[in-house]
Amino acid sequence: EAGVAQSPRYKIIEKRQSVAFWCNPISGHATLYWYQQILGQGPKLLIQFQNNGVVDDSQLPKDRFSAERLKGVDSTLKIQPAKLEDSAVYLCASSLDGTGAGPPTDTQYFGPGTRLTVL
Amino acid sequence: AQTVTQSQPEMSVQEAETVTLSCTYDTSENNYYLFWYKQPPSRQMILVIRQEAYKQQNATENRFSVNFQKAAKSFSLKISDSQLGDTAMYFCAFVRGGSNYKLTFGKGTLLTVNP
Image 1 (cartoon, rainbow over the protein chains, first blue to last red):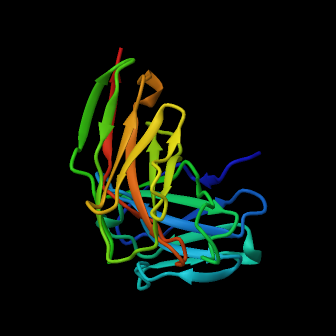
Image 2 (cartoon, each protein chain N blue to C red):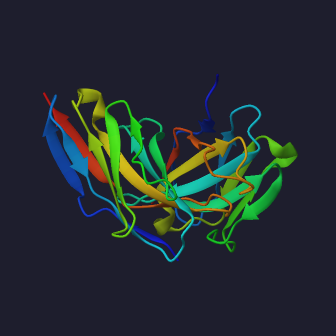
């Protein structure tokens, strides 16, 4: 079974530039998550999709970050314009069903991440 | 809001020995779940073990086991017979039951297994 795919793996940009990350979840997984992992910290959830609808985006800096999940499969996360503090690893994860309808024994599978450096 | 604290930024252990990683959490919820995730160097994060708060029995997965102390809000991970491949960042995580499974992570513990 193919895992969660992300691209690019590394990206270096100047501040105020734009950048986009792509994620392809495991086939059949309804729920997709984007996390931000700053060096020395644990991942922080930015946004969660259930199919193509947003479940939680309470920690997404909406003035500069946007995300979409067209057709409930692939997803893109965009930053425009980037700031120095956006330097981090951006992780994508997927699970079969993260709706909270039952016990969360549903495992989140993580991709390899995209390491973003903003200069 | 829930918080997860891992007080050991780094730990090391000799191959074949046992090591325990600490985690404490703060919540007013009674229905929740706890997890340990492993993130090897330059590799994907994977789930190591999970614990349901309503279960008194501690979870075990092969060489990995937890010591869940609900009253103390403590959730430590014990790795027995440590192997070189156990070298990784270990994250403790919390999710509130009945929610959208939003994971709250600790800052992690870097475990190095020495030959």
